[in-house]
Image (cartoon, rainbow, N blue to C red):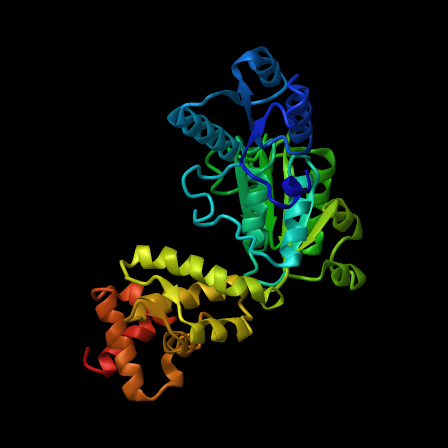
Length: 407
């Protein structure tokens, strides 16, 4: 059970008997029950002698996926375990073939902070507890929110994500709560708000710290009542949602300053998860970079297989103020510009010339700048948008560089 706590498998192949002197099968039934109680998402396949089939059937009634009879057929064994694995991963919202490499899935790594967060997720995901996720930009708050939803009992329902800070004040109520036809100019039809769209599933409010104070009261009322009244309407519509919020701001400080309602803060803060900055989980940097390398090497058809020691050292010691998002951007550009089978420190240094924040190729001399522009255009077959993204510049800036160098 301690191994199960540390390493949560998709499937357990469990023998019915563990001692030569005991062949009742009760041990298998007992441990099958213990496993399913501790980790309901883990599938159990029982391993039994022919005489114990009745016990194996009893095990299936208690939650086991299937059973394998000794002596076993190899193909049958593999097929059963594969089917059990696929069922477990589907239930957890994971891709059955490449769960760890699916884009947008959570990379947990091996750091202690992330291990603690993963343990917390396993406890809270099956509940409807409201979750507040905080952390610096680029740490993956939205990815963690999707992970919580994928492991929840609502995973079969929609998860609706809203960048709350990007909604204008005039459209805030309409976007979140909906409106009826004729409620205001241009309201030509009824509009279903985000709360109703997420009914039965999860509503993710990102950048919640940016919501103006006078609108926070309206949001609090809906969260408390779990019902919405569309703008221009009078009928309250019940909504059944699981709420997850995220921000890179210090909400406690905003509360002290009177810029965030204290009652709203406590309403959304049932469980608070703080995602660490990438520089605080250095042991995860190179494995994460390797994951991005594999993804982008496949995307751009590059023959890269690994990261050279000098590049790994450079990545590990980086500050990564943009966190995972910056690292991903770095590796994507390095993959595109690389020429060997490994990423080297030279490739990573090329990335430092064109940072994700947009402080781009101006940092180098003109000869180096022209070479980078030429390489980007060659790598992208003249695609202006792709080349601009690779170099970390805007399209107009790249047009100016092309004109400057007669390209």
